[in-house]
Image (tube, rainbow, N blue to C red; front, side, top):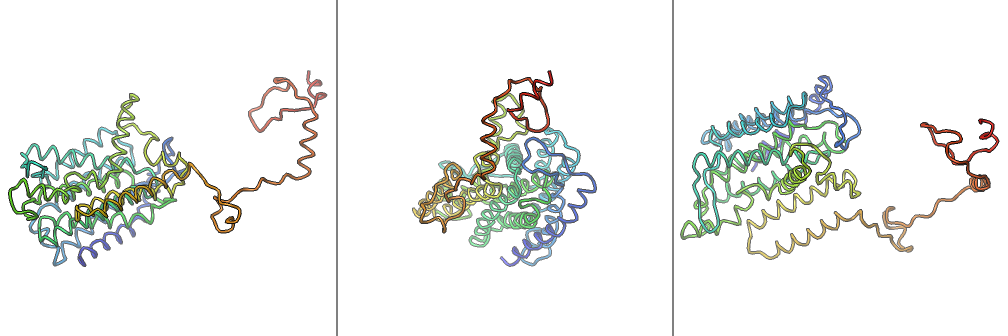
Length: 437
């Protein structure tokens, strides 16, 4: 655990220290796009934050390679090199997109090629535990297609939620933390060496997000851009692919008997890993809803709009920071709730706790819809938003002017023409109106 924490801290420190110079570089190169209709921020903000995150990834892998307890990951497996190759390619395409706004199909092709590069170097899904059937071995073509699909879905899911300051980095950090705890449990608790690469990837991913978040929290000084969102999405997908495709359920020895019984017994453990849908459930739901919404309107699935979940939270009445925190809450609830269930699937307290926290989350979601007012005796102890507001006092001079205005008769529209600047009074002097004619 000490080596993983050291790798995490080095990754976070390198990412944090490089983000400032990268921001100046983005401003100097003009990587500050104009405000778009779907954007929430009001001032042009530099992108290219993914440059700092990529170098943080490289620093984390380099440090881990020189640590005694983690160097075996690089000796026994080619997965770290496969991750670095795919990450370098997707990061390069993201940098070009942040500067020149590449076409969506070009980015989709780059995502598929990046996944193919990882598959060619051994980072692929070899088998899947299916309840009621057992461990199903996949053919090379099946494993390749499933790996590419998982990488593309995860990258775009993370990219779709990158719409508010600190949202994507925080949600991926929460998912990586839950993933790290599970992978470390397999590696350390069950002494399964095949889970070590996924544990390392999750620790590095947490460091990348934690190092970038101080610069990206509202109000953000720099955005990660597609170079960052596609990068962290690929690393998250690589973690899931590594542990899902390499760890055999039979090795866990959770149930002595047939392969089918062993897989059924191991199902609660593999819930977060068969596909990372439960870990990134919120981004994946946003992705599916966006595709359905845009296709229903006859638009391209890649066309940008303001219908994402975080946009709807803002429309309900939540502030920017509260909307981000609510998305954090639901991500943590789903990720860690699933993790807790995988450890103790027979505990009813876990289910009750998830239900109770879900109820709290629903109340937080609907909070702007109702603003209850506290009774008069509690006005001094509740926050200002829940106090009864007194009607503003009207000065005596304003009341006199209002009375004079009421005595004047309205002039029909069109007498004095119209003006496009300033406010035009509905009442005017008849003598001036007649003199113009």
